[in-house]
Length: 296
Ligand code: R5P
Picture 1 (cartoon, rainbow, N blue to C red):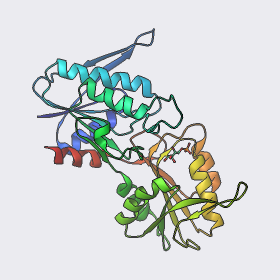
Picture 2 (tube, rainbow, N blue to C red; picture 1 turned 90 degrees about the vertical axis):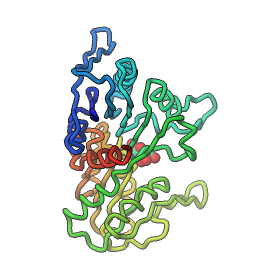
Picture 3 (cartoon, rainbow, N blue to C red; picture 1 turned 30 degrees about the vertical axis):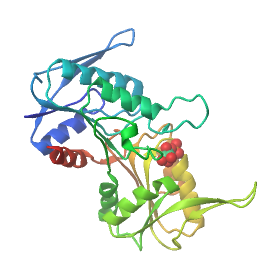
């Protein structure tokens, strides 16, 4: 039997994954003590079972990490068989390198702690670890990054009659995600590139494609403040784009990011349910369920 469980941030997503796999959903009781400590209890037996913990780390990463560590360690202690951590939004991944001397590389620290707490397998989705060439540098247990880009592209493509569309990543790093999204709907892709001519003159434009008169789908991993997407919309409009649509895997949407993106001219902004938001209209449950099926 496979058991799917979750702490406080991802119960609905965990339940959806359980439905897709015809697996058992096991609820947890999670409480915060007045001093800020966390209490966690599994509301059923896990002994000798394979257990999948679905725990996204958006918005309150520190609280959710403590919940995760309590779950993973307790599962080992309670004699669960194989413990898999599915971390749809993996916080702390953007610091994937020591950019300034003395900095903590939070991606490495958190990855190691997840393994040390008891994960035998780890899955993430569209994780921002661009500068990590070898996953073995992060953990000794298997660590696999899944993607929701195809699902996001299909959502927009089926909802709108897109005119000669292209998928664009707002920076070079997002180019790989743009390719996955574009391949899913058989269109061209590109990424925006910054060219500096001198100290004052910087030009940002698509690396290869002429986008004049074309509908554009911008894709990125995260929308946080929205500044990256707003800048991209501005550049694409200046380069003659027609209608602009936006998709991201992790809609953190801090402050009034969503309103500002719509004000910048996006027709629709869509995200997934790795982080619950007003635009979480695409579920990653099928992506997670497929990966778990292949694991068995
Ligand atoms: C950065 O490299 C990421 O891929 C995202 O583009 C970034 O995190 C988005 O942040 P914001 O919405 O604050 O611009």
